[in-house]
Image 1 (cartoon, rainbow, N blue to C red):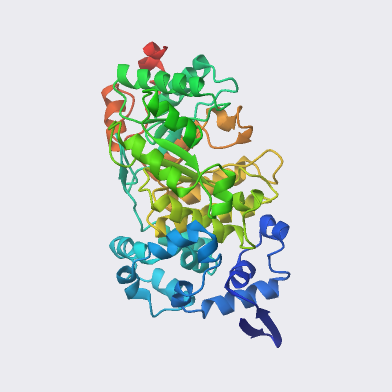
Image 2: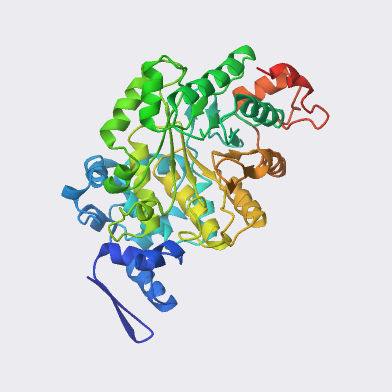
Length: 455
């Protein structure tokens, strides 16, 4: 039990998961789950109590019981006491102060990562302003490699997302060519299939791989099918570069996705066996509210559960991870303010846990948000050092029916902040005369250099 008094009023929080939930910035998903603070005063009181909570407590108390949840078991069993030692004496509030100090360098944060549990990281994020989340995350560079190198300082990669409502190869190819002319695709060329047909997935994989090989494009492909479909594609000899799967922060929610940790391990081993690039072959997507929408939240707030999903991702040494921050809808993140806060939280928490974090800066059409909100979040994330964002034709995904970031948005943020593509991809663009010495796409080139890309 946690008790604090604020302005003469006594507040009692029954357990750690209640304290974490009440301390969370306001969001519609926690209200839907019935775990949110009922007043601003209660939220402030919870943060005050959380600030005084020892970090060590998170190693003694599980928000979801160890015996009932394999994600909890993963978190506790993989914890590194030696890495935790430098901050083991701190409270959550003291940890915030340390993170904002000059002691929290990139090297120090990298060494600390294995010693942090998701709940510790979620807790400290609840005490931080947006500015704090950006300041700390911007120091942490998590670099991964497949055919391109993603996450280096001064660079921003783009996932080229050429979705088609019917998985039409011509539409997908046209969108790929369009994106390449804007310098997008260095994170991955990743297609969300309209269905989960094995044949369609294999056709899309072969289409992208043919373009890549014919034009020597230094990138990687991914068809974002269910992990079982990808396993079958591997067995059929398809050119699988990256294994994709949506993941969540509880065993029950992952079961709703049709997965568990053993299945992910099996699929990763199968993908590695193809030896198509580096050893970092996993691409995971997450999103606040996924556990609640699956009925697997155990009364825990959605931001803490989101951070627990990063423990799942961390166990498989991924090449890419991104939170699809506004995709689930306003039931979980109501408006632009809540989406912005969630995107900065997710990026901060993922980076602190050692993940190569990207963010799908997005919203559904029925949310109280618009592209101005997304412009703000995109800019803030780029300042915070996000590894990659999405590149969608016109920012409007006609298959998934949501609003994301466009190829033009990639041009904007790279130019304004002086960010370059992944080095291998930049060199390829330069070989075609498409970028200048600053790594930015030359305005006069257009698609002329890629007119022969049609399949």
